[in-house]
Image 1 (cartoon, rainbow, N blue to C red):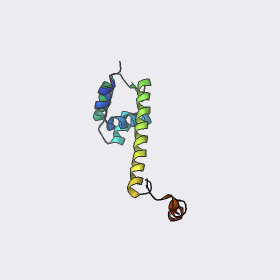
Image 2 (cartoon, helix red, strand yellow):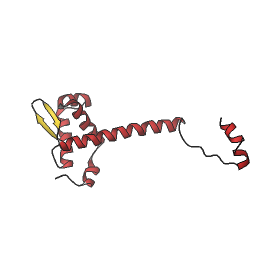
Image 3 (cartoon, rainbow, N blue to C red):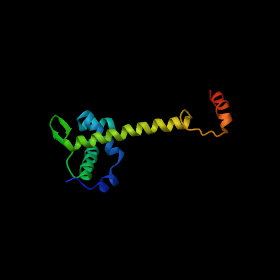
Image 4 (spheres, rainbow, N blue to C red):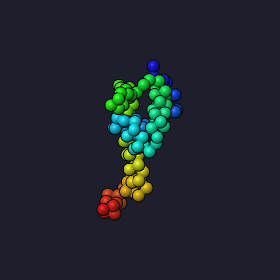
Length: 122
């Protein structure tokens, strides 16, 4: 049985989500540990933490590697969405900081806004 949302959301970390995505892409604990620059036992421990948080196994292990079960696929899909949203957030923050996007509010009397304002903006 899957654990309650407040337990999962309170303890799930970005490193957990990154681990899920890397495991899905490479299908090997050894390769994932190299990519994430952690030892294989530490990676296995993190995977165990995630499975405890969810309350169910997320991967099927066999001699050829590791691959997600149905629950694992769902969690990986949402992990990818989180990283895609973070990428969008970073782009927007950078654009706001550089001034390439944003809002400007201009006030004026109607007689000037019909003629002077368009010329000024152009």
